[in-house]
Length: 576
Image (cartoon, rainbow, N blue to C red; front, top):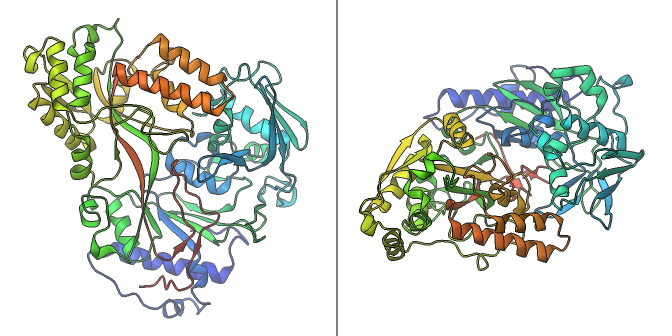
């Protein structure tokens, strides 16, 4: 364990290390409910320190997949995004209702033609202190830093997976410009309404050139941003510790400087059941998602906490911008499609009507998520209205009628349909296959590795496959881009093409009136449902188990870990 000089008050850090010792003891004996020695007694081993208040003000969570980088240019998955969000800021951000609000930019203007965005930056923002700066003191963030950070994403030498954000979208010249220290302009090649949503993504975090130049590839483990927390130490495979940034620019509504927490501690145990045990023992403050290994222990079939857990943990559920679905290749030029009964619209629609999503969610997922009985765009997205897009519910008689219309009465003459999935969804695939078989639709399940499945989807070699689409940003365009014919795979894994949808999609990108644009999205979503290149399964939910000691913790539809306004109750003893 390494400690940055002056990074943490020594006494507080000593207590924190004792907490780490207790945690490791608990993992060695997971089957027993341990009674821990008091904090001060343990401290006698190294000298008695202060009360455990400092330890209690550390937010602790586990990241089972590990964290590959703290460089925002590589913030491509949730584990990196959560950590990066604590260290960096973007020009704009999303609030709890997924509306775009100021962050590093105080305000902005959009030109009448929708091409130029002019941002007026805050002048009280400083980069965190770092050896990359003269004297180690953080300097003021300026518009040139925004230009550098966004150009860095675009630079092929960076090899950022976020390079797609600006691909083909910026004007050839002066696409990114700093007019002065506090004014930044972005100019588009053509109007693209969701550009502000893109700028809120962690990829677009502002970084200082000095730190990137000093550390090179090791910038991944030597981050420097403007955010509420600063890296204190990182032992890969063991834990990562962030401390409060005392110079963070944001304040709450009564003038108190954020964040409230003294720090964040991330552990890396790869077993979710272990993380759940640690939450029980007070060694973690929240667990993200409920693993199948203990879902029946915690939740009933209606998604509610079982009586034994009420008062001990808090269940938090929130709509999540993720649609789980079955995809169907519909490229009429493909030999695979020409040989498949899924080339018939009526067969695809029959599959959509042919299984009970509500029963599937209740008995296989303990009601974690909502049955996808409307469009592809999920609940939680701005403008979502379940009454405006008609999807599919369980109507076996309609399914039978559609099979007959397709020339397969009661499934006669229908060749077996192969469904590709991965092992964690095998039970769901089996449920669907059983119900479809009762209608005369033979489905054969093939379980393959995730990497192979994605490869076959991208190469249009998967005829019928399980997929999911998680929003990168909170605009329906992100989901409907999956069905734009000019998009490759990904995102258009089904190779769907319909000129009606293409026109609606293209109009939506340039439409400046929200109500009109949302109407265009709904029309496109409805057309996709009619053509049935996908079988929506469920709209996902964020499911958190939270310690009762935590205050101000709230979920959002992007499942972004927001800790600036989180605090811990002083009544929490932490040592159980």
